[in-house]
Length: 585
Image (cartoon, rainbow, N blue to C red; front, side, top):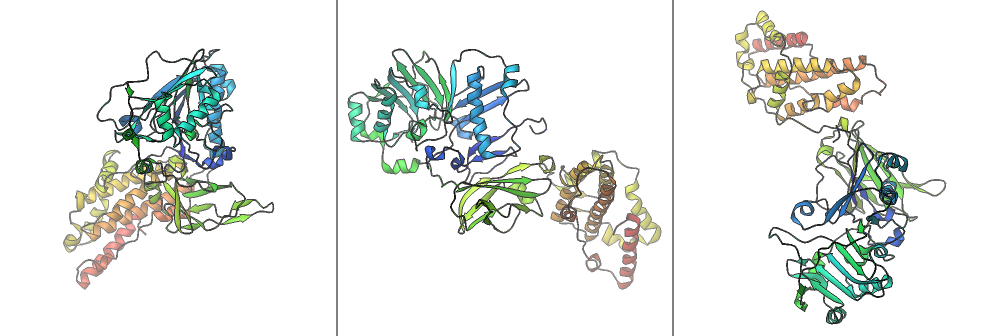
């Protein structure tokens, strides 16, 4: 997708990815701190960023919006029974609602890498529009809440699918009657925890409502697959004398889930349709007993365990070109901040977050840039950790920029890498064996048979090795600019840095062969430096730390071979000749 210039990014609650999950993709994931919204006090302390929305924009400026109950998980897209739907945005009202939703997220994330939302003028110019809508895209950021969309004054019956329920179901139903005073019947299709119990605690108030048929429970009308983990779908159907509505989205049958109670709101979203389906969404009526309902322990086990959001906004961005983390801080409160630390992949020690005040008494973060010497850890770990008084309080994802400088692929082993250099380029004119020929011209080869002609691990022969390095040098010298040369040294599969790392990880049977390989790497580095300085570019110079990553320390091979004093003298002279012939340092 990156090569095709498709902007693909995800938004999720900061606390959802704070567990043991791993990020196995380079797709940008922007985490949401629910305290960052302007109306965070109206949302409440327990607010969860809970929508399941997908927006697709094509090159014709057409928008397609998807919404429903499915999380972006294996269970959500393969194991649960979910409800989800896609629609083309066709009216100005739909467009404005979608734009408000995503612009609100973009404004709180404050990441300059996120492109601006499609303008109304471009939408008007290219989209096929309708004057009247069959559905509304409803979300928490609208001035009108979900219950005002789904319920009306003449609503008499409400049918709902939900896996989760309020701790006070009767109280929530009484809230519904504020919008719909004629509401007489609430019918629930409730998923059962472990296949046995509704996630609702039995109470006298529920018993009275069940007895009066004000609250009834129904089975799922759809066929059930034994491999199915749960029915996670959230479906709402209101029926009135004149007005009926149908909704699918992320709304659970809870106070927070309806996003309609001040101080008890989640960020939710979905579709509200202006008609109801002909098919019934109810199965057969269940004659409930107290044993159908959960006890305190089951409810506790099923409860989502979320940490407290950070008292400040902190976005961490890693620049692959500069090998540097950039911290972007914004205070959410006026309270003093102290004893916070951050642990960043690739930086061994925790770093103190030092907060100070400017002349206007605004809090700012003093240390905002951290450079890594080696980016290996950044490839493996995509999370940073925040500590308070030494205790881990949250784990969050950092975003990445300048992906073209990121090493995303590698060879399985050194032999495969050498093969790619030998066979994917035109083989040279036997220049790679000229060194061995010059050896025989100057010395009695029999003296060195025991230390030179040793077969290598994975059958990497001298011929293959020298040919590979010769081809590598040609490849470097064909770099059209500094950017491309940088990628061939540090980024592409089989780059010089990867070659060096694989050589250092390999156990060579012959110290002489190892010495040659390390010398060849150092030679390529020096060739690259000289060529890099000759290339003209508007870009700045490469960091010294980057060049130093390519350095190879050479083994003392004179101490590793068993030779007589006379042979050592000859061998030393031989090494000097090799250095001269091969331009080794």
